Image (cartoon, rainbow, N blue to C red; front, top):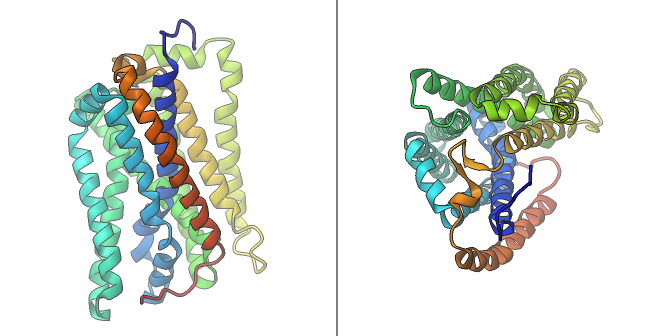
Length: 337
């Protein structure tokens, strides 16, 4: 897998790893607050919707920092790939930006608006969250197939949009199970129980389509002895889905001791699926067309950027850890000052 690496390969590998880590953290962290947004108007009472917003309030804006970092690293470290990928995906990228802007505006305005206007901003927040989640799935589907530009490829990408939205709804519901209580927690258990099925179908669909899209990926996954070791990934994903299924049957509990289990298991599913995709596409940054070594910027540029990344990454990481420590536990009532 790492045979015959070109000279100076450690720099492109380092930036590819940093970019992949940023995208994984974004999908995992912003995934749950996008999921809460998708589910927002499923709650029948305004007080429940306020509590849902309160549960993500300290986190959602900081979570999007990882998206900015990941796209920024793609631009400065792999400019050729940045141009190719964004050219192929300009429609879903545009829709994602519209969705993120809409939910950001709605989040701020709903807290200042009079009561009779709140439902409008709730609708805008939900629509923006759903549009952003769907667009990210659309981009994932197009990337997996190598941007084919066919009707079949487009339909698969759109289906991935639905699957990713369901996955975000699942982790968002799991977040609410962990961070809320009472009737809202009971609702979240029901939402997670529904979202898990479409999420499972999506994982199976992507797992089947990825090797079928490329003979190289097919050989990488299904040749011996790799098959023996790689088989642990789908087995672990299946086990985590089983954990989600079983834990939801026993929630909510009065002692709240198992509230964290669905969220942790869903997070594990996200990480393992991302790991499988990363293994499938290595060393390509544009599937089967451009490797990270071919797309990398000049060595001198990468060294300068690396010094900047060495400062920015610990700051973002420290801030993220600080926020999680300060705002742990069950969500409190929403208050604006």
